[in-house]
Image (cartoon, rainbow over all chains, first blue to last red; front, top):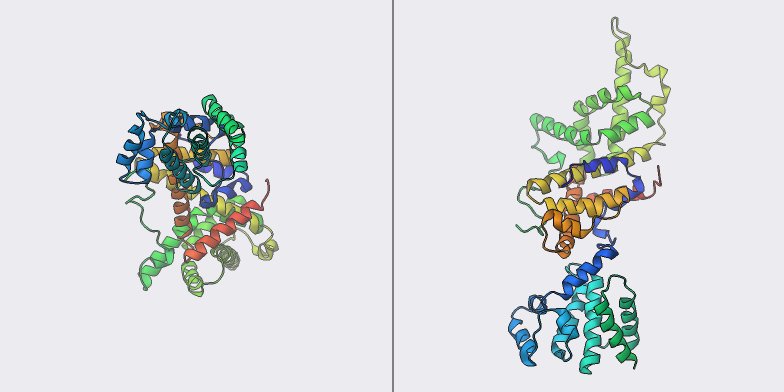
Length: 172
Length: 250
C-alpha cells in the first residue's frame, strides 16, 4: 500500500490529463494490459465449465453433469471441452450463449477479448468436431474472428492450433 | 459487505451547506460556518484568483481569504444566491470575493484617514484591483477542479482504508490515478494479486469496476456540498471536465 499522497499527482499534472478523472462512468480506457490478457485467458480456459454455466442458469448443474458424462467425458475445464474429440453440442451451445452474453454485458466479470475467444472457439469446435452449426454468424465473420484470435500475441499456442484447425475445416 | 460493494454504512449523504440548521440567527451562523468550511477547501483556487486576477501580493492573500469566509455578509448573500437558483456557484464565489476585497481595502482606506491607523494596501495606489477583467478566471477554474479532485481522492482513500478495503484503493491508485496523471504503465495485475491477496487477475478487474464507481460517487458528493441539485452536480462536473480538456499543456 502506497504512502504517497495522491493529491500531489492532481496538483502537479497537466490539466488535460485531469479531465479523464472527472467522469469515471465514461472511462473506456482498456482494463487490461495486452501482456495480462494471456494470464486471464489461461485462467479462464482452466476454469470449470460447470461453475460458470450453472451461475448463468441456476438449477442447471445437474443437466450439465449429465451432458458431460453422457459420452464418458471427464470435463473439468473449457480447455477440456474445446480439445475433446467428441464434445456435446449442447454444451458448446451453452458456452457460446454464455460468452456472447458476457461480451455484451458491461457488468460481466469477463473481459470482452476473453469472451470473444470462448464465443468463437465454441462455434468453430461445434462445426469442426460435431458438424453442427450452433450460430447464425456468417462464415466470413467467423473467419475474420478466427484470424483476429490468431493475431493476438497473448493467445497461447494450444488455443492457436485449435483455431487454425477449426479455420481449416471452415474453409475446407 | 463484500469487497465488490461500493456502499458503506459509514458514508452518509452529503448535506448542502444551505440545509444546515433551520431559520434563525444561530442557524444562519451555522450555515455560514459550514459554507466557510467548504470554501476553505478551495483556498488554492481562490488564492489563484486573488493573485492573478486582482494582483494581490502572495503574502496578502491568506488574511483576505480568512476575512472572506468569516464575513457575516457572505452567508446571507449566498443564501440569496441559492434561493435565486441562477448562475454557477464558482462564478458567484469569485464575485463575492472580489466585492469583499474591494470593500476591505476601502474600509482600510477610511481607517487610514483616522489618526493612528494605517492601511495595508491603499486602493488608490492600486487601481488594477477594481479593474479585474476576468482574463484569469480560467486559471481559477482549473485550480478549483484540482482542489475538487484532490478532496475526492482524499475522501475515497480514507473511506477505503478506514473500511478495510485497501485493495480497492490500491487498484484504483495503480490502475487509474497514476497511469492517468503520471502517464505511467498500469501496475500488472499479477503484482496486485500478490500485494493484496486476490484470488485472480479477474478479481482485480472486478475491484477496479467497484473503485471507479466509488470515485464517481465520492466526486459527486463533494460537488453536492455546493451544487443545488442532481442536475447542477452533473453540469458542474461536465463544465469542469470541459475546462480541463480545453486547457492544453501548462
